[in-house]
Amino acid sequence: ITEVAFEGLPVLKYLDLGEMKLTELGEDVFQSMPYLVILLLDGNTLLSQVDPSAFLSLTRLKYLTLHNCGLVSLPPTTLDTMWSLQSISLNQNPYRCDPDICGMVWWMEETEVELLNRDNITCSQPSG
Image (tube, rainbow, N blue to C red; front, side):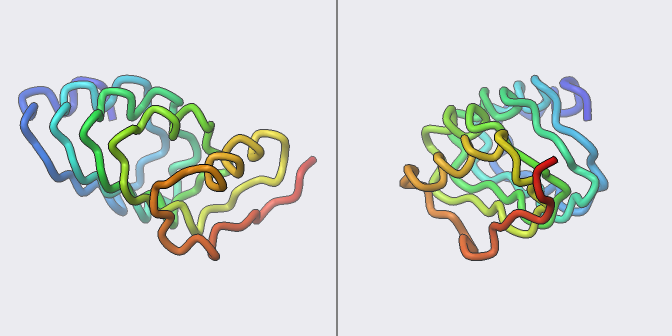
């Protein structure tokens, strides 16, 4: 998805991109959607990386689904900037147990955001 994909939709509040075979989310992909409240990205099993600033412009985002994707890690800076976030699903991803996962684990322990299916957030790949 390019950063111009959603131009002309500035007041969109709900976007379902679930099971769309996305492979990555770039830096400015949602920049023209400041009113987005709900973003569903679950089921994108090829989605292995998210740019740390992909959600930066989503200042009103409250609900985000990233479960059942192909994420091996998620930089904590990706999550730290989502001040309005109330609920997120991160489970059923093939997370890699390496030093990159530490920031995400710390965020999960410290956040007040509701982590849906928290018990199903596990590492699938050992480090190395």
